[in-house]
Image 1 (cartoon, rainbow, N blue to C red):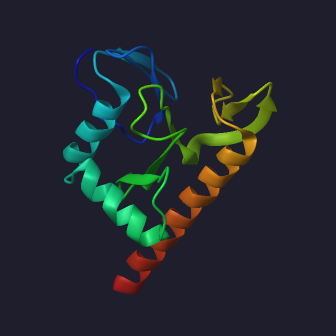
Image 2 (cartoon, rainbow, N blue to C red):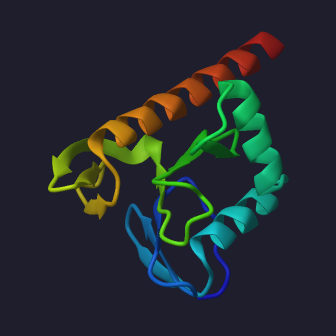
Length: 150
């Protein structure tokens, strides 16, 4: 598969190698012939912005500059966070809204999604907790802005 846009069922974007990415949805899995970063870029553009634009907005909203979660699509609150620097080829992107639970697993973390599917991610439990916290803060700021507009 060459084209894919992140949607409300997308749980994770996981690099397989430099040229392919595994996309996990609630009920499906796809192998995409693109890098994970490109899937993120294409999805942001599909929903009307650029990856860099969404990243800049999230940086400003969170007053932070490293491993920033981003809002892919506002109306469905689709928020993904990186497992490590987004510039690294092995960076996974996780939809924070699908995380059911997580636990330390050796020197990694095991994430269980709402559909009870599990993945292991190369990051510490503390780093994951920080990413969940940042994503939650981003969601809160975004919701408050929507409410204040009304």
